[in-house]
Image (cartoon, rainbow, N blue to C red; front, top):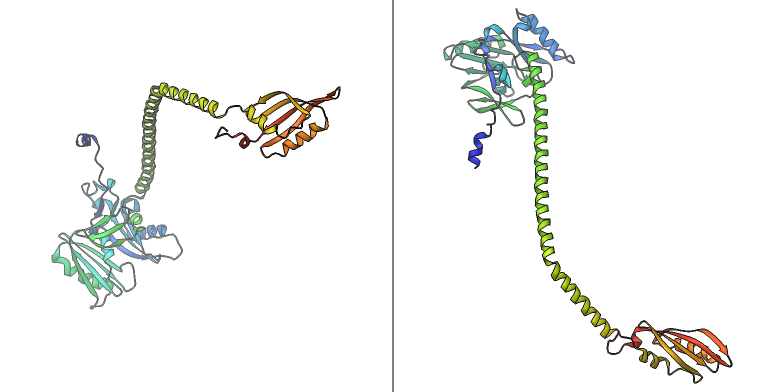
Amino acid sequence: MLSALSRYVPAIPPPPPLLLARGDTFFIRRVDLAPGEAVEPQVRLAIEAMAPFPPEQLYFGHLPAGDGSAALVFAAFRRRFSADETELWDRAALVTPEFAPLLAARPGTGDGAVVHVGDSRVTALAWRAGQELPVAVLARPGGPAVAQAVVNELWERSGLAAEAGLRRLEGTLGFDAAHDGSLTATLDGEPLGPWPEEWTKSGDVRDQDFLAERRRAEVRDQWLWRGLLGAIAILVLAASLDIGAGILGALTRHREARIERQAPTVRQTETAQALANRIAELSEKRLMPFEMMAIINPSRPESVIFQRAVTRGLLRLEVEAQAQNAEDVGRYANSLREQPGIASASARDIRARDGVTSFVLEVEFRPEALRNGGAL
């Protein structure tokens, strides 16, 4: 399935190339810069002074020193490049002279030089001790046969001592781009050294308006790509929520159907449980009027006669009584309240007539007083 679908998935386009222009078409000069001043105007002024053509007819660029004290300026007449040579320039990420990667092969601390011998050109660079940029750069047509002549010219122009070191290189020069956009100069694919990030813009020889438009297009494309990714993420999230809602709905319907199937059994169980609870309540929580009467009778005065008794719930008893002695009513209620099994006792509706006092005695019992084998 995946192999069949992969035919319809567009391939990831290759990264834009990093191109090197022929070095022997450029005139190259090291230019001192005024400290604290903008670099671009100084470079343009130097090119106008050195070149026989206006900048609009040139491919030019510059590589500034890290301390801003100097810049390596290079320019070439546009007509010296054929259409075949510039065919890929519009799609390239960088176009710079082919001597540029050799700047990463700078000698250590002392004076020194590097010469690259190619099949059709020889490029040589010379450095003074402690300087980031070379003092002389030569690029001459020809192969190994002219290498020594180019080295001799380099020594003459740079003024290096005869004992200064010389490093000879052969192979294909280029750049390797990392994922973060940083560049590394290479020789036959092996690293020569890092290339400063600020050189990527200033060292490009193409038209500055074209490069500015390219940068704006890259920013625009980046935002469009981010917007596309955001839209895809929203669609994926919406699809995930829709799928989740469908699964949840299916589970809910399945659970409701299961509950509906089990409803008769549940109702039968609830009815049986309610009936069992009622039977237990009737068997265990029964009224005990005789036990209540047995508790309150021992302390009854002889003048008090019970006429009628009524239970009010499981723990309350109302007794209608008469007393020949009115004082026995209060003493009787007080004596009941002192018994541990009685929670409260009171006499109400006390009426005296013809020497007989009638009253209603209300007694509330404690649950433990009426327990009879766990009845309450």
